[in-house]
Length: 278
Ligand code: PDD
Image (tube, rainbow, N blue to C red; front, side, top):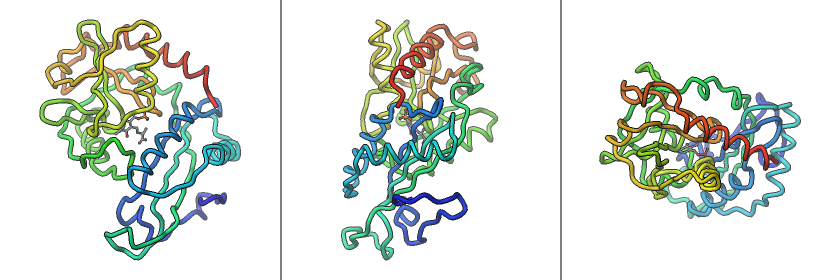
């Protein structure tokens, strides 16, 4: 925290931290496999973009952040899981106008163990439901305002499925914490980048790897009908990688089993990221 290392019990922040009072903060989640970070540079670049968009002043150096994360992974003996980074606007008197305060940002980094490579969901697939997207309109900024996503995920689990897909005006945006892809007429399709979705690091890696392997891929709007009639569906995220979807709103996707194309994309993604771990 703020450049110092604390045990889980010792680490604490002020109740006046704007991250706590206003969700005035941004974050990144980077996967760790075999003790190495996946797509670290891309995550750091997005962190800086999020900070810039919120006018959250920073002079963070990539190398410093990288070294701290590597040290934390080593100290915590983390082999597989994630490294979480959060930067808030810092501690100030509670005021909607943040321009008045000149607080220093609060930086918190921690690790969490999580099954990533051996996540059973990657082998059996997940079931999802569609729900309205109730978030604010700047979903391209990775802020910690995650209440709508958290409600959507919990709602899905209460309904006996794994996750929710957020829908707006009949078109799908993304998962509660992932980007969405469908396969339609043999072509891989994912919603185009806009303020409506987060520009996922895994999403862009998958697009790049598909192009490199001559798999046809398009970025365009997907309506709910296309989703329901898709041959295959999958979600991507830093901690889920390429997650096959086998059921949407109670209907089987394809024959209800993980499709060949998704398996191929899972294989390509794993092969490619292993080449650039850091
Ligand atoms: N969430 N869309 C949303 C709303 C997300 O929260 C995430 C990631 C993604 C996928 O982005 P990426 O591929 O860069 O992880 C898309 C992370 C994993 C989380 O909040 O834990």
